[in-house]
Length: 125
Image 1: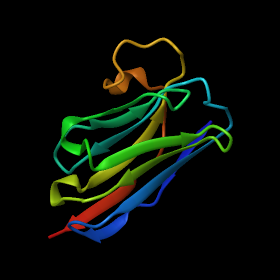
Image 2: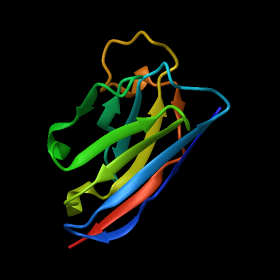
Image 3: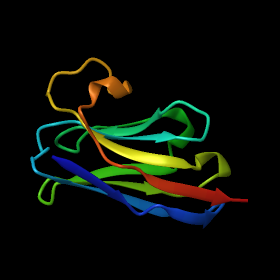
Image 4: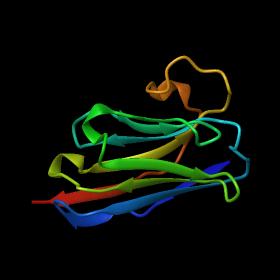
């Protein structure tokens, strides 16, 4: 099972990036998927999550209205569209997938079984 994240890069504040996370080895169409990020010297934190159907999306407060999570179960891929980027959004972004339909808190990284390798996002001022 592999999650391959891509789409990171260097962008100026106010710009946009679209991250992708392609899953292989297993279909995740029944499971919650999410994005987390980790800035240097900080703990990994929740960014966004999306239900198996794509009908429900959840965001941390700081990205609401700027980021949009979506998924295509047909191609086993989850996306994170990031607009109006700020310097404080700079981090390594990780995609993750739950391994069970049962969970308690989608914001808790321990709920996620599978992780991608991370893609770095740098927002310059």
